[in-house]
Amino acid sequence: MPYPPFFTEEHDRLREAVRRFVEKEVAPYVDEWEEKGEFPKDILKRMGELGFLGLRYPEEVGGQGGDYFCSIVLAEELARCGAGGFPMAVAVQTEMATPPIFQFGTKEQIERFLTPAIRGEKLACLGITEPDHGSDVAGIETRAYRDGNEWVIRGRKMFITNGPRADFITLVARTSDEPGYRGISLFLVELDRPGVSVGRKLDKVGMRSSDTAELIFDDVRVPAENLLGEEGKGFYQIMWELQGERMIAAAGCVATAQYAYELALQYAKERRQFGRPVAHFQTIGHLLAEMATQIEACRQFTYSVAYRFAQGEVPVKEISMAKLAAAQTACWVADRALQIFGGNGYMAEYPIERIWRDVRLNRIGAGTDEIMKEIIAKAMGLPD
Ligand SMILES: Cc1cc2nc3c(=O)[nH]c(=O)nc-3n(C[C@H](O)[C@H](O)[C@H](O)COP(=O)(O)OP(=O)(O)OC[C@H]3O[C@@H](n4cnc5c(N)ncnc54)[C@H](O)[C@@H]3O)c2cc1C
Image (cartoon, rainbow, N blue to C red; front, side):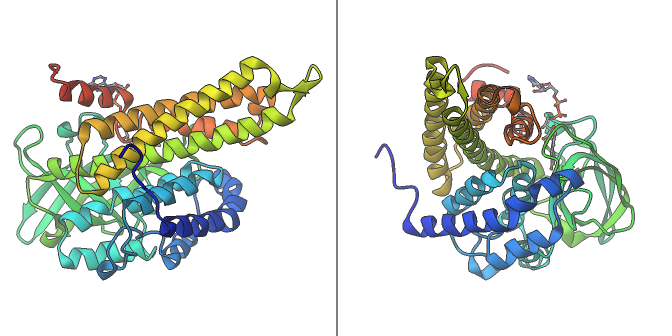
């Protein structure tokens, strides 16, 4: 079965609905959101009403009961909105901050955090990275101390997407003095609790319609029932979360690359130099052929890994390969697309420069290229 039927007619209908939504309610406004450095929270509410924020969560928790390829459809269609920031913010909500709640949370945590996030009433963020610990997740220093029926949390989290305005964070913190991955746990923390503050809202090269913050936790008290999953098992839980994050990042990268390629193809057919469309120069034609080939190879690989993920498998090596290949391909394609646009490609009034700036993050976020290679090499049996 080399090309399993990943998408059904139901997925096609969903794709049409998301595409309509993106064309009418997102694309016309992204320039404004990019300028402002954030999207309006109302659009999240709207996505909640349309059911787009809980596509693969079961109906009992407020979701649509769809499969993983529904999430892929959403990521692919959002990638065509003209900016990477807003789709990334949505992916944090649906594929990063909330899956651990569904997977490890209590019924009460699901009601308090997951269901309102699916409705778009609560904006979620995910806190792993710290100022001194990025790739080295096991080294995090944010500390939670038990005090009676509460936990007291102290530390700082860096580069937090949705951080400036989120209602709650799925937070990784250390709950014991054991070094490394052993003493780590997950928490759900409402961000209006005393002691939480936004250290600073961060300025960025791209992804500008998504807001990013450094968050400070200064003796923030949360009830014991805000511990998510098992105490001390947070490292395994967040490693599980990262697989979904990388899987959806791969799908988003392929879709962004496809969009950049389509724009470049169209432009190359229209732009005339030396009396003919630039697409008719063999160097440009062959470049477009190579772009299409790389994208298709990445797409088929990403779909086949996603198919395994959808069946409940977590193929870490292949997910890492898909994320690495898709992120590098998206950057490579965006750069070639900009080249095909010539000087216009470098101008803000053409869509390519933003795609070129935005995709770059994908070789860093959700685990860098180098970390993906480390994971793959380890899975191949090579020493650390
Ligand atoms: C716009 C944006 C949004 C983000 N959103 C979030 C978010 O919502 N939540 C969150 O928790 N984090 C978020 N991040 C953080 C992101 O996941 C980290 O930036 C990423 O994991 C890399 O960590 P670092 O930046 O500290 O780099 P470092 O870990 O300091 O790495 C620096 C360099 O060293 C390399 N390196 C590190 N270790 C190794 C090694 N063992 N072998 C080889 N090379 C190595 C890296 O690949 C990199 O090239 C975001 C980042 C950005 C830029």
